[in-house]
Each structure stands twice: as C-alpha cells, then as structure tokens.
Image (cartoon, rainbow, N blue to C red; front, side):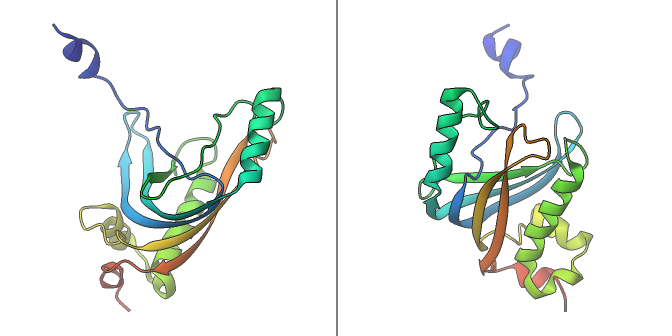
Amino acid sequence: MGFFSDNIKGATDSGGGNYITPGIHTLEVKEMKFFKNHQKKDVWVVEFVVRETDPNRAVFEEQRRQIEAKDGPYASSSPYVGHTLGQSVSIVEKPTSGEFPGMSQGRMKTFIEVLAGDKAAELDDDDFDAMCGDAQIAAGALVRCEAYDKANKNETKMITAFKWALIRPSPDMGGAVEG
C-alpha cells in the first residue's frame, strides 16, 4: 500500500480553521452548514468572506504579552494575526455537545435571527434547512460583526463573543419565510 491508502484515505479533518478575531468586520455569508462530524456530533458552521476589517490592536497586544509571560487566560492560545480582505473566516458551534451546548444554541439563534430580520419570529425547521442545505438562502448576506474577547466563566481562557447586525439581506432570504 502507499502513503495515501495507509495514512490519508481514512483520516478525518480536525475542523480547525480561520476563526473571527476581535475587531469590527464586514462579512459576507459564503455558506452555512449543519452536519454530523466524524464523532457523530452536531456541528453548525458559517463561512464568511471578509469585506472590511478593523482589528482590535489592544487585544492583540495584550494577548501577545500574556503568551510571552505565560500568564493569564490568553497564555495557552495562538497569537491573533487579524484578517485580510477576501480572507475566508468562520464560526463553529456544537449545539448538542461540547463544553457549553446552551451557549452554542443561543449564539446560533442570535445570528439566524439577525439574518431573518423582522421575519425571525416565523422561522421554522424548513427555513433552517434552506439556510444550511443545498438552497443556501443566507449566502450573499452582508453582516457587521463586532467580535470581542471575554474570559470564560472560570476565567481560565478567553472566548470570542459576537455582536451582529444585518447590513444587506441575502437575495434569497425573503423567499424562505412566508409572512
């Protein structure tokens, strides 16, 4: 057997990616997915293209200080580098597993409600399937993301939180929710 057959063919991707870092960003929704990972756990992923970015330099500097000092909630993280225009970034939530599934569900709800605008109260399973399935009705939406770091409840590590605002709805979003 060769290297591919022995090593690559049966491998699974770790799911790692380019996550949104602190700052204010204009992001275009590229794709939204909901699937079972290799561990049979539910995973929700939204992939974006960065259209504008204004990174929070103070956060980056504090993170680098803590990494170098090996002290503080950032001490074990990788340094932020910010984003470039056109870069793909993503958010990943594990709504039925992971450390805080309830928090993941709330973050999903907030983002989806921002996309739906005044139709948010009418959303149902069919709409979610249309967003995450082949129809990809959220693709093309433009959102403002204010990303900021905060300590987890044990204050042992930093997590990135988001504030979302809809700048431009996707061309297809109005068709999924009947009003």
